Image (tube, rainbow, N blue to C red; front, side, top):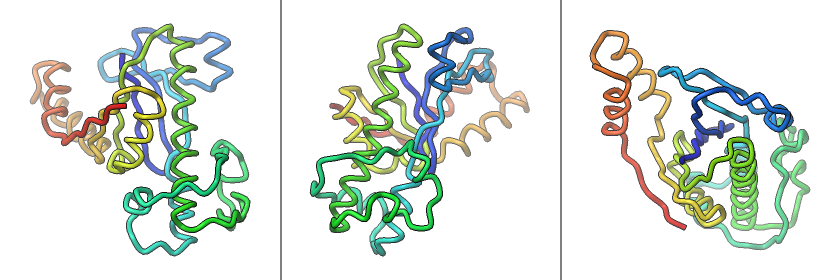
Length: 206
């Protein structure tokens, strides 16, 4: 089974199931049941994305791109940031909210990346417990899928294959639905195959 992760400023993580799950465990985890276009259910949770990373990148004045910055990371701090902390949602200064640690830009890059990886990796056992499934891969889409450092970190931390791309998953999905509404596809399976064939993907192994 595959976990689904759409990573942008914020993220949605979950999996596709045949029928809703409304157990106490699912409710406590703030999991939502959303109907898919083919009648199944997306069991989803809002999880952190690149918001904290983007804010730190901006405040530190890093001139390279976010993916380049993350790839330059160097471990200078052993802890992690709690990306679910309300204090990180929209502070005046993200550096101050993260504790104003005496780190270099490369140290911040490694800490922020590790913190995001930990926050997302924690969803794997949660979703496995709620669904009773064993997962062997994570399908990562959205802008975050374009960061090789993030995808490698996630594969290493979870022990799962990370199948990354497309970065413009929302655009492809919207186009596919418009074509489907015009009768261009004979079935949902044909539409899904067309989306897959239109997307560049990279596989990262643990």
